[in-house]
Length: 579
Image 1 (tube, helix red, strand yellow):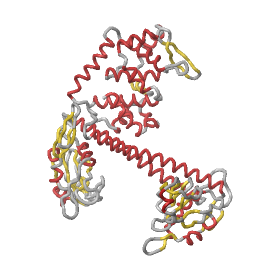
Image 2 (cartoon, helix red, strand yellow):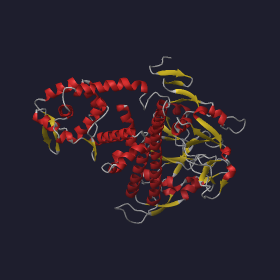
Image 3 (cartoon, helix red, strand yellow):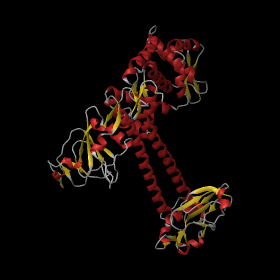
Image 4 (cartoon, one colour):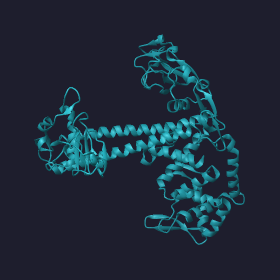
């Protein structure tokens, strides 16, 4: 197999040339939980016994009520060696104790605990050494070989990126759970009449379910009709297979008749109810989607009978009485709950995408296919190339003239009579241009609208561009900015000479970005550069802290555009654009 330049074939696969393949035992010292003196645990905390004790459990919490005097000042890992969560690793900081069959890893100085945790959790095949209960031993994991980036900085960058993806996934999981709880609360209030929607009043009517939406056993289908046809077959577990030529008119509400009971399903289209289901044959004037929510709320498991496989007792269902509103109020209630379902479905789709993204990131980052830290062997040639372009752009003219030409060409490229280029927008575009060409953007301050260079407005460039006839002010209704003027060709010629033809092509990716999106990207890039100068790992929490700590930027974190989801995406985009 051909290996691309800068990479090598190893026993763990293709990795960068400057990465090593090392056993985990060379990356960390390994102890077993019981080696950390479990006899020295106390059931109360005092000055001596002040560190939490972790047990053999899939949890990042201490074993309640137990403390240890074991002290360790660095970062370490605990790995579940037996039972539930076998092989799961957790990073720990500071002192703690460990009992049961936990493995404890103390990384070497050149190994980041976060990187080792990510690799063990997501890449290491678990070795089990037991004829009975599977277990992971220190000997087995110490022999496992992993690819290791050459610097702790790169290891932390990889772990930080994966941690950001985990944070996004966790935030979506929590948000879905929150929205589901809100929906459940709404169901309990709206379907019982405890809370009435505006515009509705009057008593609800008590009825037996037989007179609301009676259930009937589904039909047997000939094998020939199950093999062809466009209509879904509704089974007891809600699986819909598009294999029937026979059908009943939708919408439909159905549930399992035997075995799988209690789960209620709704289908909008025409369908065929399989004989494993009970389906509503007549809604008796009630709104179908409301009936679906009502039957889901009632919980049909209560009507199950049989000592073996539970069967839904249809007679008991039909005699059960409820109170319900008139159809117009039913429709309004169903609309509210449907909107909640739609919102949850969107979040669940995002969660699926986020998990797929995380899987892709692991494949790329943990093998070095994508580098978050530029390898040392590539730094000198790349920097020299970019610096020479920047030097060429400024060799025969000063900063004012250079920035005048940049503004003029940005106006010509992105401004029109209908959509004049605003100062706010050209500022963000010029920042991105300088970061691309020169790897730095000098003179930009942290202002409320993002990175802003006041010198372009107050120290000449903007005025020179207008005086030379490169641009002119223009207003179209509420839109105010700049458009190209008669002498714009001169500015374009200078720009072509100084920057070449590829820079504007690179900037085209931002043509349809909104101002808020450009602000997000530029703001995140400035924060990332701050972190790099301080030698800190670039990750979501650190970027948010930089934004939070600046008085003019703190309020950004309250805006939707600066959500965790968007920040993670911006961090990845900046890495792709500028690294």
